[in-house]
Length: 171
Image 1 (spheres, rainbow, N blue to C red):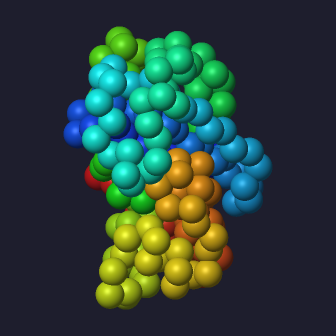
Image 2: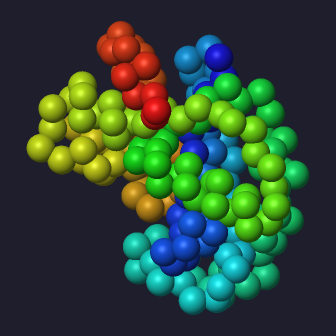
């Protein structure tokens, strides 16, 4: 199986407002590649700049999601499943952004490391930063590539501990 951990940063509350994407590919249960891009969102107002540090000045000249789709799709080639921490959010951004640009996406299942953390780790808080702290995983929180890499590491930890990965699968 080829898994791709995916993380989006968004400009605002819109599901179409992806402003950064991080992708980390897992093959044979080891990290083999990564991909990061800034994305010009459809609106210039960046509501969440205080969280992720991405400003309109950084994005205004970047290609849109549609303009970068060929590179993203090439990286995703062969992906059997996505992994995300709070997968409903990242799945929503992926499909919401693709829909706006009339990009047809294949149905690929999502595994959610947040769901897995709640089931397997029994922490007081299961946010990405708390899980990474508990597992000693490096994290530059709210940087899409760092978040995706951390998510991939959490998933690999679950596998090493022989936790049933199907428990992380979104229905």
